[in-house]
Image 1 (tube, helix red, strand yellow):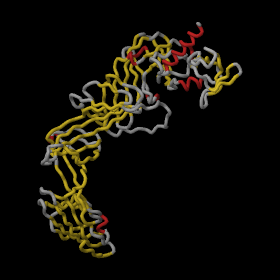
Image 2 (cartoon, rainbow, N blue to C red):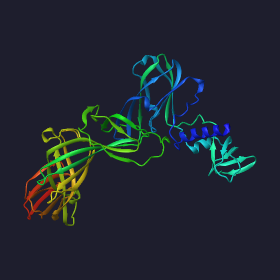
Image 3 (cartoon, rainbow, N blue to C red):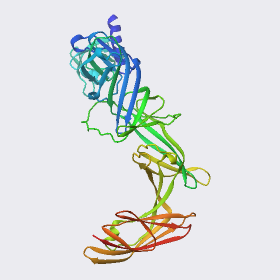
Image 4 (cartoon, one colour):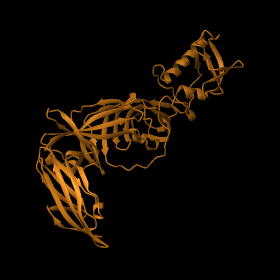
Amino acid sequence: MKKTLAAWAVLGMILAGTGWGQEATAPALKLEGKLPSSQTTVADQTDVAVTVYNNDRALVRDRRKVTLETGELTLKFMDVAEKIQPETVSLVSLNDAGNLHILEQNYEYDLMSPEKLLEKYVGKDVTLVNKSKEVDFLEQKAKLLSVNNGPVYEVEGKIYLGHPGLVVLPELPQELIAKPSLIWTLANNGKDHEVEATYLTSGMSWKADYVLTMNKEETQMNIEGWVTLNNQSGAPYNNAQLKLVAGEVNIVPQAPQAIGGAMAKRAMRMEMAPAPMQEESFAEYHLYTLPRRTTIKQNQSKQVSLLSGTKIGVRKIYEFRGDVAYYSSKIDPIKDQNVDVFLTFENKEKNQLGMPLPAGIMRIYQKDSSEMYQFSGEDRIKHTAKDETVRLRMGKAFDVVADRIQSDYKVLSSTSHESAYKITVRNHKEVPVTVDVVEPMPGMWNIIEKSADFVKKDASTAVFSLPIKAGETAELTYRVRVQY
C-alpha cells in the first residue's frame, strides 16, 4: 500500500509539471558541483519595463529581490521570455553591485512534456498503474522499449503495445525543466540583492494605425493615432512600463533557432488610455512612452492611444499623371482615365500637430448626407518627422475623368523630336475641382507652346493646374521639344 501511495505522489508531481493538474513549483535542478542553489520567479518581481521596436524585437528589464547565500552558488531565474536571445543577457545588483559577480550563465529551454519525459526513460524501468479491470495488476514494473508511434513496454518477458493505465516515473530527468530559465553561477559576498536582468527577445512588435475623420467641406479633419502591440515572446509582462521606438534600428540577421513553444490563439483587447503617449528624441530615432503602466499578456494584441488632434487643415488634390514614354514615339490615345485623388496636410504645430508620426496606415472617413461616417480610402505613411508634409493616396475619382491625345509628333534629328498633346478633363461632380496635370519630361526639354501656365516642379516634371467648374470641361494643349 505504501508503494502505491508513493507511486501516486510521483504521478501527481508529473501531472502538475505538465499542466494536467494545478501548477506546482518545479524542483531544483541537479547542477554540477553541488553548489548551493536558489531560484526566483515572477512573484519576486519588483519592476518590469519593456521597450518594443518595429522589427520583432523588444528589450526587457526585469527587477527582482532575492536572498542569496554567500560564496559560490547557482541562481535559477525563471519566468523569462521563451524567445529570449541568451547572448544579450546581463545581470547586475542594483543595491550591492561590488559583491555579486557572474561566473557562468546558461539558458535552459528543454521544456518538460509527457512526450519528452517518456523519451528520457527509453531503456529504463518505469511503473505501470492499472486503470482497467481487464488487466490483473494494480502496479507493475516495466521496461520502456520505445516511444515511436506509441509506447512499447516489456513486462515479465512479454511485450505490451501501450497499456490502459498510467505511467509513473521514479524521478524527473535533470535535463528537463518546467519553464524557460536563466541559470547563473554566481560569486556572492553579500546577501540580499535587488537584481536587474536585461535581455532582448523576439516575438514582440508594434505598428501604428491612424483614423482620420474629415468634414463635409474637405478642409479640416480630426486624427486619432493608435498603437497595436503584439506579444508572442513566450512571457507576460505584468504592470509594465511600456516604451516604443520608431525608426529603422539596424539588426544583424540571426541563424534560425528552435527555441519557443506553440502559439495560442491571440486575444484582442482595447486599452483606452486617458492621455496620449509622450514623445522624445532618442539617438537617431523617436521614443514614445505610455504615461501609465499596463499589463502585456502572452499571445495578446493590445491597442493603446498614441496621439490625437482636431481641426487639422487638409487639402484634397486631383492628379492626372503622364508617362515619360509619351515623348519617345507616336502613341495611341488614352480615353476615360479616372484621375487620382490625394489628401495632404502639414505635420506642424500651427496645424494642430507637429509630432513625429511613426510609420503606419492612415484610414480616412467622411460623413455622408445622413451624417454617418463612411470609409473613403487609406494609405501607408513612412516615419514622418514634424514639419513635413503627409500625402495620402485616397484612390480614383469616379466623377473626374480625362483623355490624352498626341496631336503631333516630329523627329527633328537623331537626338531630338517634338510632341504636341491635347488633354481634356471633365468634371461631373456638383462642386468645382482643380486638377493637376503632372507631365514627366525626359532629357533636356522645352515647352514651346502652351494653353495654360505650368510650374517646373523639378528637372524632369512640369505641372499644369486646371480649375474646372462643376459639370464643365477643361482643355490643355502644349508642344514640347525634347533633346537627348
